[in-house]
Length: 188
Ligand code: ZN
Image 1 (cartoon, rainbow, N blue to C red):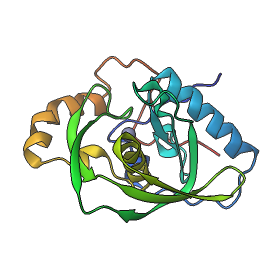
Image 2: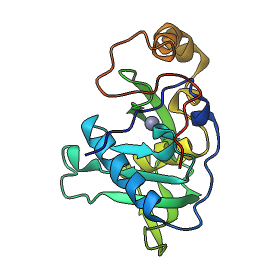
Image 3: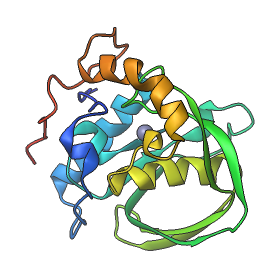
């Protein structure tokens, strides 16, 4: 098992749009395996490649940890693209491994349609609602350089500012390995 350090809010790679994948080489396969180890070790249900400092358009999800979703299969999404969003929006509480121990209600479309490639570069389309739609949008946003804290009201952002700064300065206790500085990037 290989655990990768998780990037934190304030890290530069989390603000950048991820590079598209042209081929799934051995390094990419290894990265995906290590991402699953890292996500499961941190009890996460989704993880984007830039959350381990890799500039690649990949994210993984596994919502089977969540009650009522035990039968869900883990998914690897390469070069994902949300092609449809419902007009109806809903508030759901979110957390993020890059913003440990902070949670906030975030408003997003209730349903989405997403296309992506699997590790054999075969294309797939998923129509999602509920928790699945939520996790897919959260992770997809990571690959666009967007965190859930970018989507909350100024008022809530203000109330979280102190705690977010503590995370950025690494002045809290982390339950899993994290990056040592804001410039961290994985060499691939
Ligand atoms: Zn996240």
